[in-house]
Image 1: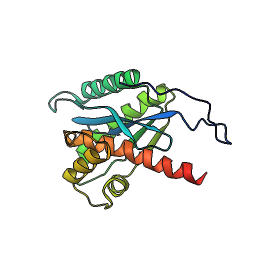
Image 2: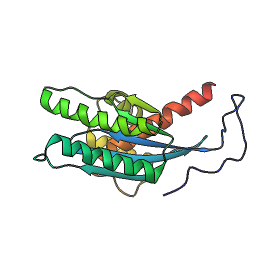
Image 3: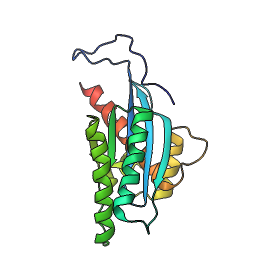
Image 4: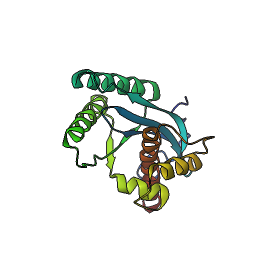
Length: 184
């Protein structure tokens, strides 16, 4: 793991240090699997992968215990990586309402962990993430995995796809903020 970077004193008119690194924790929420990935971007450079993984829970375990597992793991990831911001994929409500509700609960404990630390949270729609990463809002899971592998210069596509999706959310935030910096 890398640190948040050193500050060399280069300031924008706003007073914000433009040479410091920004760590972004991307999250692909789920009740069975929560993908996560940390990327770091130094002002003006492409994002780099710092760490990644997938939190898994057993489907036959009570929901409250699954949520505790997710919360505890997210808290540990926050402690180990010390991100500056959390980027979370928004929920996509399909036809399975029960599953959607469980994912919403999982997303809630993830947001709670960030809130307890005062960590800013931003959300991105799945279509926005796909469009940013692949150039099309209808990209499939394999396309996202391959593009994240290329963007982050990884030796192989991140697996499972939940991890790739989480990295895609983090990279989306890195790219979105890069464009905002250029406009300011």
